[in-house]
Amino acid sequence: MPAKPFVTDTRQFPRKEDAKVFFRAMLNRYRPGDKVSDADSRDLAALLKHHTEYAAKVGGGIVQFNVIANLYNTKSFEIVRRDGSKEDFSYIHCITPKRD
Image (cartoon, rainbow, N blue to C red; front, side):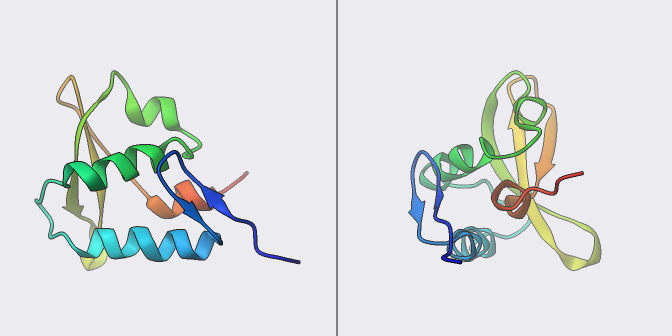
């Protein structure tokens, strides 16, 4: 079975694995506490639309994305909303969502 492409509003990847490599590299360019650049934020906003809980994650709107430290010496992207609240999200879940 041929690989399925993965497409966002800003990028096209031949395979989902290519998208994972791209966003993993993006995450690894930053340290916990860093604000994500405007160019990378556009790609993250487009990726986030694929999240199964998109509306809940975005809330009243996104101001910026940051990188935060998680458990077990890992890091993830964080949404900073207009109301000042924050929510982390997994780029992997956006690409290959877990289904019940």
